[in-house]
Length: 133
Image (cartoon, rainbow, N blue to C red; front, side, top):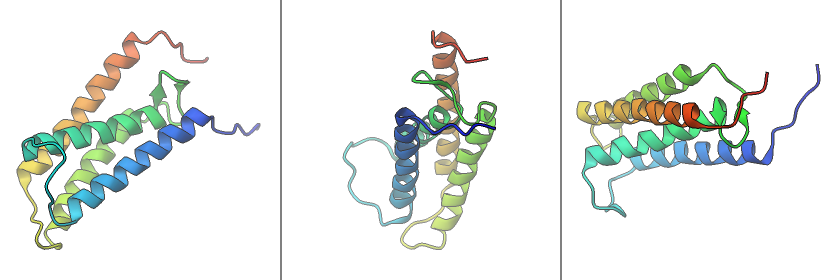
C-alpha cells in the first residue's frame, strides 16, 4: 500500500485544531482572567466549542481545501469527542480550585459542538470541491 504524506493544508489544519484544544483546556483549568471580548460566559463556552469542533471536523473529516480527510466517516466521533472533552473539563474543574464545575457550561459546550456540526455540514453541502472516488 502506498503511503501518502499529509499536505501543507492538512498540517496547518491539524496544528490549529490541536492548538485550539490546548487553549480551551488551558483557559478552562486555570484561574479565570479578564477576557479579550466582554461577552457572556455561556456564549464564550459555546463559541469556544464551536470553533474547536469545527477545526477538528475540517482537519479530520472534510475540508474545502482538500476534500475528504484522513477520517472521512468520523464526523459524529469528532462531535462526540468534543462533547466528552467538555464534560471531562467540567468534572476536572471540581478538582482545580478556584474553578468549579457547572452544568450550564457543559450544556453550552455541547451546544457549540453541535452547532459546529451544523455549520460544517452546510459548508460541505454548499462546497464545489468534489470528494475523490
